[in-house]
Length: 115
Image (cartoon, rainbow, N blue to C red; front, side, top):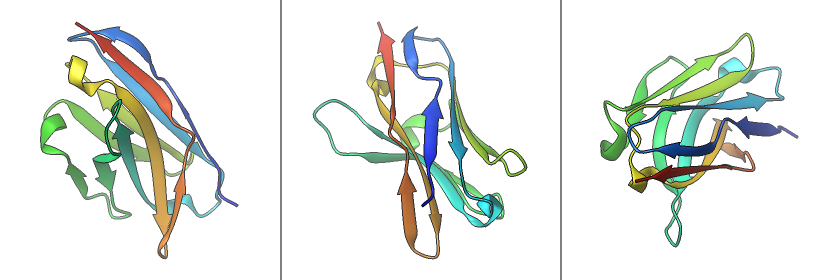
């Protein structure tokens, strides 16, 4: 069973930055597509950013130009660099990896942006 562990969340003031990390337990990590999702209070979980195995990326319009997804296959890590944070970015952030139609999720990490 693949396990994901996120870290890096916390409380930050508007305009600040945070870097989320996600460690994966699979030995074939490079074959997985990766992504970050978030669930704001009282709302549905939504896509933030994703990266295919070839490196192509896709971002939600609300985070384009502010957030950057990256991966380190040798370390089996996924990152989300979040800059110019806004109060509306407050949410639980989840890491997800996907391979052959199977999705694996982390436990989530809380990000709170104060105004």
